[in-house]
Length: 224
Image 1 (spheres, rainbow, N blue to C red):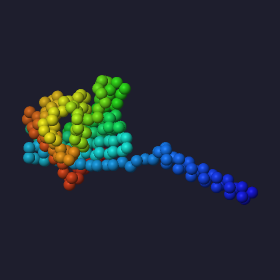
Image 2 (image 1 turned 180 degrees about the horizontal axis):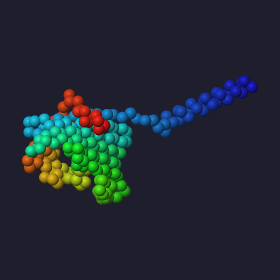
Image 3 (image 1 turned 180 degrees about the vertical axis):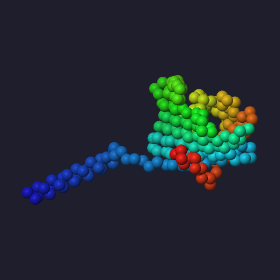
Image 4 (image 1 turned 30 degrees about the horizontal axis):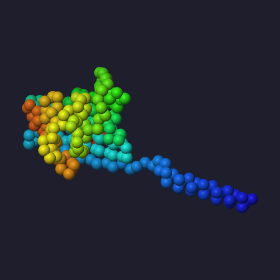
């Protein structure tokens, strides 16, 4: 009887080991791939004066990735104002599947909108309405320009204006975008990383310069 139990346990152990080996060989053992997280903070200058920060957190997995943007600006245009923002962009296989944008100026919500991948394009919604945007799959949008240099794209998607914007190449590693509100944004790269962003409007010029030594302000941490 003892021999029978010993033989049965041996066979059971062998079957378990064979199953584990089979899972490893076929790749059917679904294990979680560790994510890679990078973070960059840009200082924002209005003229020569530092007026705020923009913090970008990029998390990448095997199929999914996420970009989070936290911003805070305090400046004076006749009146003093403080603007804070929180944006989240989620991708699957490099295609945007969901975005959530929230911005507030002087305790007043100035922008609150979401985009969700839809069979016919994207479902755009804000607190007052929603509609389907019949646009192709978004792989490059404005926010992604902060974490990677464009390759062969000729247009970039603006979540803020919910439309495609032409991407103009000014020279080697430099690109210009003219938004519907008339502002011009110039992105410059080095070794694939964004090294500066210049935004020009009718009455202002703003520069964003990366600074790895800057810690995100408390407002960022509260919004995470």
